[in-house]
Length: 314
Image (cartoon, rainbow, N blue to C red; front, side, top):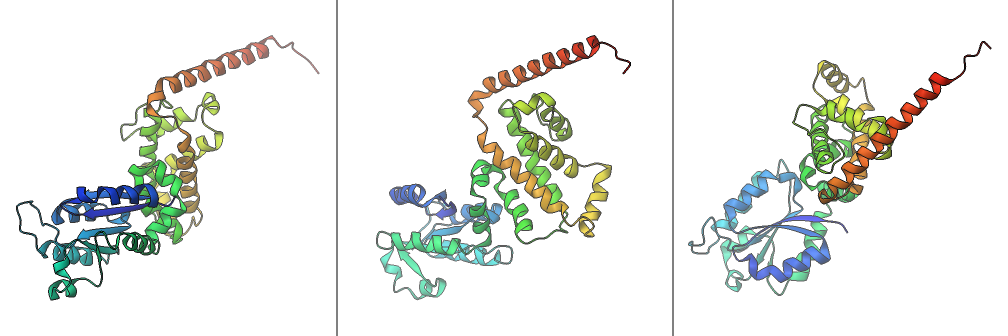
């Protein structure tokens, strides 16, 4: 199911719980609820790249339940959303249960269209999906839905990286830092799930990568994922080589590097959907230790066999 991240601002959102649950279960909505205009707009701006749509109560309160309901909160949200349009356009929907607004001239001048609670629920859902599906960010998420479902905490960085891929911005060297952030998230998860015995501390990506790339780990992590991890880490990690890599990408001397880096990253993130839950960490650690012991025994057997092999002059 395609998913849509919706910011819903209404001081009485509890009264809409049945509708919201339906939206989440039947339509793939991921709803972030806010009571007040100011808090909602702060949330909106902090996660600007992520929203599929914003739903506003017509008489949304500004910042306190003690306020007299009026149109100030709606005007504030509308103006802030419009101010941020150069950075990102997000469709806005006004959902009202106030029939007195229908003949309010100020209200009519503020919004092109509104939806009445209880009467226009189905139309609201339909129009949200239609408007969201036209947005580049939503299209990107839907094309890579499994990755976004598996890595919700990396959503913001993923959208930025995948925009580079979709728009073929092969000289955009800022993607190197973004991929490195993703690899930090990957290492944290590998440690939490028991795949890596070294905890990522923000500066030891290479050490974590080497641990995951050990020969005995081939029983746990496919070789192509091990190599993708090594490639992503070594290309994006700070060091003497990064300045050269940055300049080569910027100057179009490595026209395929950015796309190969992103595809390696996607291979890793997609494979990680198979990772067991945190609760199974002890089981994973046992499997890793077992693979290591098996490899060491086989290695010792090969070494003994080599030493005992008869010398031949032929």
